[in-house]
Image (cartoon, rainbow, N blue to C red):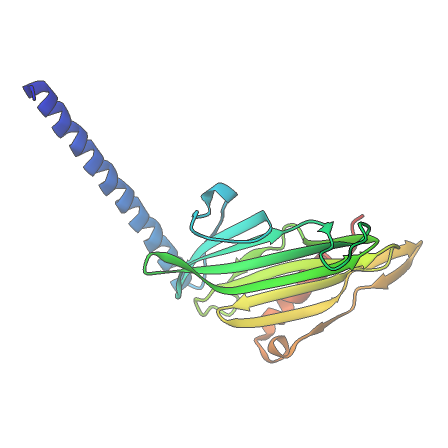
Length: 229
């Protein structure tokens, strides 16, 4: 090997080492910022594109959104997906269709993302209009009770109908391993000043949990209560 080639190889190796050190430094800084944020009652979350999801993470359905955050439990990712409507697997008639939606939570343990919970809902064998869809701009992470654990908020609607009746609507909030559910129907206007739907009920977890959870859920519900055609 000539002296010039040897010198160039040393330079290349030095640049690679410097690049790695720089990446590790910035990664450490980001982690420190996240830890500092949730220690002050705030959790910083980041939306991910489909390309940014680690390839080792499996999921069903078509990618809709994903959020990544760090809290007391470590690094977390939640992915939400929808199948859209497809030929029913329980009915031979082509007019019958199914639709599903999913939410997956993964936590980073020993440098491996492991699934810790999964939420799914569905409509089966629907011969008319079918929906199983997350409601836009409702998927988010909070820390309302300021305990350093991220609260995952999911809101979606499911329906099989051939008229202008309300859709089933749910808010699911997951804090660690604990699930909170708010169930009801959205509201439709079927004539001037005439409405149907909008009612809801809290499950026991919401009823016995912090009031700040119920207040946030009700505000989210009322903000998205009207059916958008």
